[in-house]
Length: 97
Image 1 (cartoon, rainbow, N blue to C red):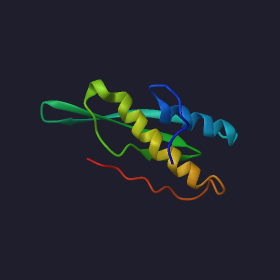
Image 2: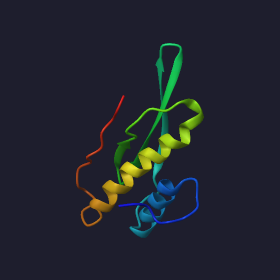
Image 3: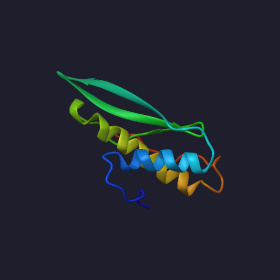
Image 4: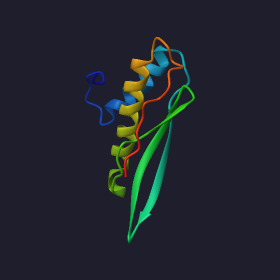
């Protein structure tokens, strides 16, 4: 299931926000996380929706932090749309290194 068509640079985040609004639940809350890897730092994101935290699937270079937020938003959006009829369903998110 793809997000609603738009020209935004944050289509998954926008679609997640819109879905939360439509379902009359709290807006998604994003968190940026980092992990030191040798001489570099890898960045990822997680988002909490309806009390469930969803991790981005991948880690990104610092200049691509928005991609991490989009990744987490995609995971949460797909979970929420699969769980819209029963928002208390367990999360099926994964975390990748």
